[in-house]
Length: 98
Image (spheres, rainbow, N blue to C red):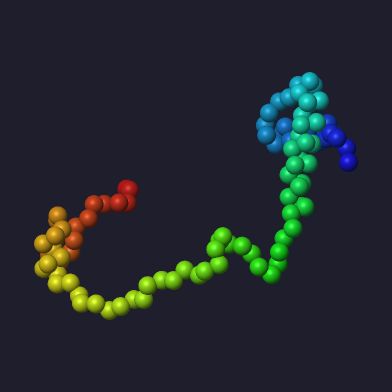
């Protein structure tokens, strides 16, 4: 593998980034961009496991509480505790913009 990018490759990257680079910078970026790409290519060396993926650092599944039917609240009792209401409806601030 070469230790630098070609001049055309660096010019292409500069064009994509919409930056102008001088000849001195060209030499510098040929080496530095190659070093960056070499580091990124190390991702290909990562071993992947097909049978089991680690999603969380623990193995116990979360347990949710059981839903239980309870007594309904009386509408009058609920409306006594809200700042504003209209009939049986609770008034809330507008949250959507215009």
